[in-house]
Length: 79
Image (tube, rainbow, N blue to C red; front, side):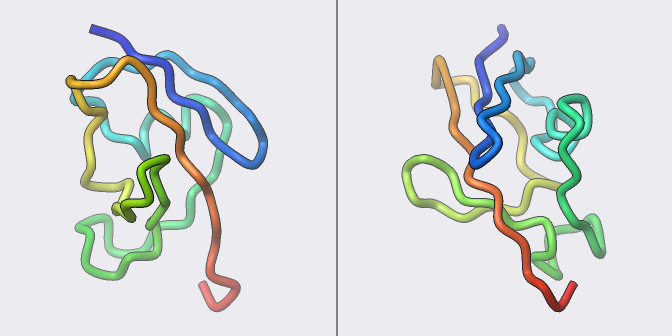
């Protein structure tokens, strides 16, 4: 099943398969999310979802219980 993923602030929309890593979806959309450990420990790839939850995009898959997902991108200038 596919869902629509919207990346803000650039307002880029991509279709993604459920279970696909959010980091991989962002790369397909041409969006560079900073990474560090790629295991969710360093939180360099942390993004905020539309419900306010903060997740590590390197270990989080696209949920199957939603029709769409909005991702708020931000970066830490120290990374």
